[in-house]
Image (cartoon, rainbow, N blue to C red; front, side, top):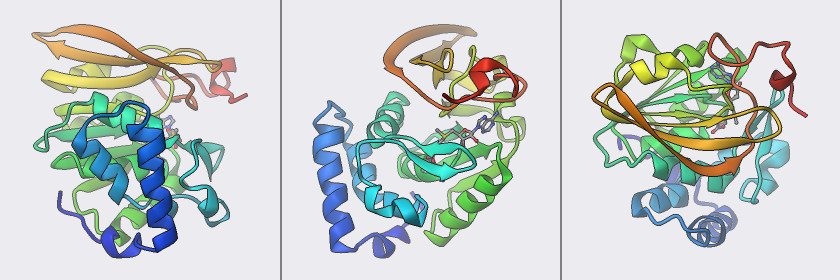
Length: 233
Ligand code: SAM
């Protein structure tokens, strides 16, 4: 990957030790085997992606608030979703739900280019500035409705959705290359399943990976803003 500025910003010994323990216990300890994913989780300074009042909890085994009712996902989920994309380093990746930019930073270490879409303008601006400050030159943050994908930069080798969709958005399948992978949580607000979908010759195969619980994907192919499942419990 091209960005490496976080090497200096993430090297406080306490944070490094906490990150190392997070990877050992929460990530490797729960079965993540991809060496490149483990390395990315060791390097990306998660404490610089959470609001200052939550810095002390940055490496805890849980999602954390990032403002406007949204969350940065639990570290294990970030790693499991990244592993499920089966990235080798040459791919172009779309992330829907950029939030803090943390998952995009992890993906940027596993792929050649990442386009990440965030619906909330305040989060998109924050993620864009943070990733620039940390030196991630291969991530582009855009503000908009990611349930439509991001057609101007399509197609993508892999697509990751980090918010819960009512069903698989058709535009995302259309924006995948042949052989491409889509990882997405699908289901109602009280619980979803994380799906891994592979596209081959215009057909798709689906595998269910984990039970999970994400904030809702809103937008044209997501939940309607005033529906019951668009509201977080
Ligand atoms: N990946 C993020 C990170 O590393 O911080 C966390 C993602 S958070 C669990 C889900 C995000 O999806 C929220 O920031 C939310 O605003 C965003 N979102 C919801 N619907 C969206 C849509 N249609 N398009 C783009 N982003 C959306």
